[in-house]
Length: 370
Image 1 (cartoon, one colour):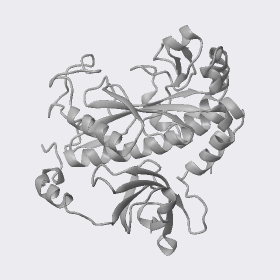
Image 2 (cartoon, helix red, strand yellow):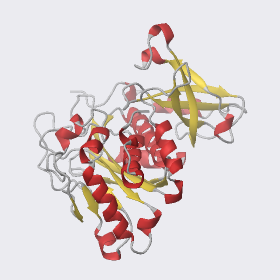
Image 3 (tube, rainbow, N blue to C red):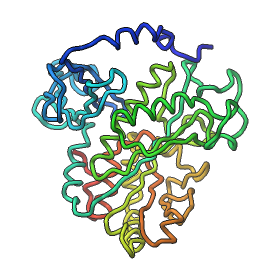
Image 4 (cartoon, rainbow, N blue to C red):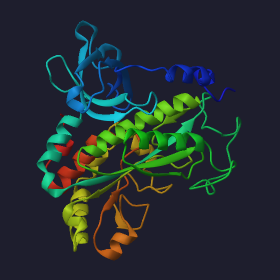
């Protein structure tokens, strides 16, 4: 069976010949946005007369929303408004990638544009200096729709030797991970680290530390870079929270701290936040994956390093809990906590908004729609 896509077999040397051509003062700007699924990304590229120095230099553009599940044919124009700019690791300087918010014809946010309401909350809570880190797990699949590198028939050896592994018999797809890492660094993504995960062909990268809305911007663009890198290698990066039933699932563990949590006596404030999160466990489960909890239901079983979706738990250094307090934090009495419930395909804007509202506003804003 074919394990790599046909497009990945095109002669990349030919491509490099064209990539080296000068482009004068012109600049290629690739607009990136979240489509109507709330999980998939789209992009299109525009030529500017000169390199933009900041986000205000990039014009608003539009696209056909009827082709992205965001509008009907009779009124399909959608606007994309640039909100964050990055260097383009695929066509190189001076070209740019820009993350965009999507708006309808009447200038109201599209249904999957959760950034707008999230930013309002982050701005309101700016004095708390909210820091976030998100651990994005993903699984590589071949064109044959099996996890990349797995035997054509059957399964690899049971879980055990694959986490943070080395060796061709344990690490599947390291080239992809390393190219993605370098692409993120070039682009200006705040990528913190990466490692092979417990299931073979599954990897994780960490984004952070970011303050406020920035974590959502950087995570979405890092996902775009991952899909683009995988395109070149002819494989698919899946964010399915439970790609195979009897193997470890994939999450997007979210690390959170406020200014008070990072100061002396911060553990008290961490415990206060955990108490509030416990009271709204079901509300958070509903916004921690795009399926309203159904995707996480497959993942949060109480097995494979997860808590049960039905119960809330917290402890120091326990990866089987809803909320983990790292060992070092417990010993030092300050730092951050890790929410292990968000699914790998979560919308980071919805996750951090829900956490911020529950822990600091004690309101229902985190569960309300835009």
